Amino acid sequence: MNLLFANDRRGAWPASWYAEVTPPLDPFPPLRGDMRADICVVGGGYTGLSAALHAAEAGADVVLVEAHRMGFGASGRNGGQVGSGQRLHQDALERMLGDAAATRLWHLAEDARALVADLIARHAIGCDYRPGVAYAEWTARGVTDAHAYAEKLRRDYGYDLVEPLTRDEMRALVGSPAYRGGVIDWGAGHLNPLAYALGLARAAVAAGAHLHEGTLVRRIAPGTRPVVFTESGRVTADRVILAANGYLGGLDRHVAARVMPINNFIVATEPLGARATTVLARDIAVADSRFVVNYFRLTPDRRLLFGGGESYGYRFPDDIRAKVRKPMLQVFPHLADVALTHAWGGTLAITRTRLPHLAAPAPGILSAGGYSGHGVALATLAGRLLAEAAQGGRSEDFDTLARLPCPPFPGGAALRSPLLALAMAWFGLRDRLGI
Image 1 (cartoon, rainbow, N blue to C red):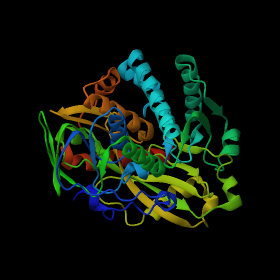
Image 2 (image 1 turned 90 degrees about the vertical axis):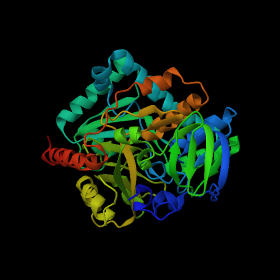
Image 3 (image 1 turned 90 degrees about the horizontal axis):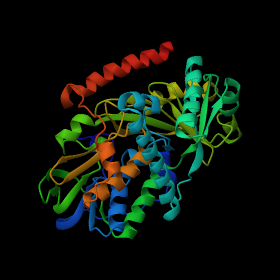
Image 4 (image 1 turned 135 degrees about the vertical axis):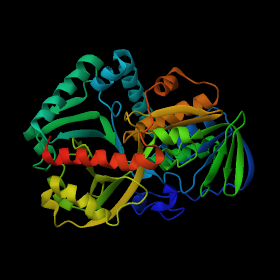
């Protein structure tokens, strides 16, 4: 079974709140026949659209192919949080890679977030960007650690935008009895992820990139001039950029062994009206300290968007509402009577280290993915780095990310999902036991 078609209607965005409120783009035509390009990009999410935009702005002839619609995958469905740093905290990176490499990764992540802000401003992308992401802790120890980490960022990295919150301060901000405190990062933010993706698509077209939707890639022949074979044509290019992330399938075995798809789910409530202030007192996003993270924010029309729950394998659960309602009511028990008007799932990708995977896996081919839930900014940056590398300008930044450890998952494609499911079940038990 192909993940591209396991859970969604071909050529359509999922029935998410984002798709309902975001003005769509007119469909781009499928690729038909033979084409020649400097760069062929496979995948129309943040990575691919950023790569196409930056390569086209630099004068390259770019063809981008997407099996569904632009922003169809995780890029158009995620929680919309634009976080600071990498998926791992800096102290973990220091232990893993050393102080110098950890510092370099911090600055790269800051560059990524600045790039998102620049693209939104430069291309007038209306995606409702707002500052502020709170990190809510379930345990007193977690609060102590979060406050200590905020001080570390200030002391060692000169980052003073993280505000510690006591239990009472968190309760005043987030209307839940579950949390013991935490922090709020005012340098981070949140946005409408589908609107951001479609804004990148408009910008790429304006820069001269050729975008094709409804174009499924069957295989890629690497080489000095790699060839991308689709259902109804082919593209011969100087370089191919793989930007399919969790939807890569079998297009490249090296990448597939290291970048694993997982599914995550979101619901939207009916408009809460005056009750919205009993959920969030300010227009921020929140992520909590569960291993399978709960994340939420309010929409402009005062709905609660709440994400929670994961699954492994091809198919989404039959009842996404029920799957997400359970953690939602653990956080907000007073919303038991609120209707859920939208429910959707999406497929992202993780790596064993939770660090992104950038590589040149075969002659003429470049790849990026595995952002592990931290992809809005990192995927945008990765796209720019791939565009530079595809034009012969492989940079120190690309090499820094390409050198990150990214071991393959044990068991190969056949066993990695069952093994991960067992591991996640264990961590889910730890969450329930509070350890």
